[in-house]
Length: 93
Image (cartoon, rainbow, N blue to C red; front, side, top):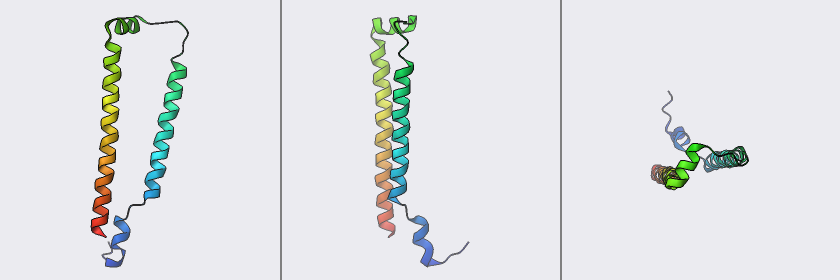
């Protein structure tokens, strides 16, 4: 490995453009899945026994709440991690 101090900052530098491209790709993928799942789920008036049971007991709202909680936690974790990385980058410069 080359221990040239001139090139040291080059290896630790993170480009914001690449992060935005990744975020756009992830958002596009999630949007695609949202549309495809909603189209796939429209199977007419057919309902399954599990759907009827969960709706009658009110458990479907628990499932949705848990899913939203997990998704919110992941998004907050990613934002927090990005801020920490940005802070470390500023300190190393």
